[in-house]
Length: 278
Image (cartoon, rainbow, N blue to C red; front, side, top):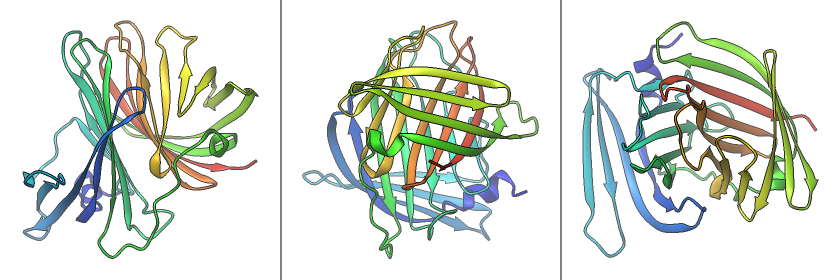
């Protein structure tokens, strides 16, 4: 098994793309072109990162970070996918998570998708930032925007969960069924281990609204086959997850999930690779 540092190194490269900010309702606010360079130094014992923002009507701006180790708030998976973010949610503080997936398993490693899900000090979802990136010589096209029809069906998955307390990872199978209930609703049933979770969502344009729960949540259907799944507001006493999905192919999807317990403590990250079987 690769070390966390070696998994991090799978992200090396010069990634050209943009940071696209969306409102909590999924409306595009601003799109800022970017170049993110991750360069290995000293036989890859160090990594030099430069994030260059290239707004059309303003001077460029660089953010530089040098790494020689990784902090505990980030977890990498064997294919280079990762999640980092707040280790603790609390009232009156900002909160959020970042997710990253690379098309390492099903393509030519030429595209990367990242996402930020950010909450304000009132614990309400404030913005979502979608980061679509590719290597300079990539000819792989961007995926179409995600829609409900692409999600409907039966999905069989394999998942790995890694824990914040560094215990050994768990692997398990999953089964997800999504079907149309009527023209305005979908029904979703997720099974893993000995648990099954069923829910109903109302379709509102590019939003799937799960309103019949103690902690209402939504899924935003976004460009490049991306999805954002998170609560509209975080409250004490409820387990919750932050999730990003990516439809890599019409029948292949990956999801990366950051889970928090009822006290607001970060407990784990899960990477799911699903294949549509019907």
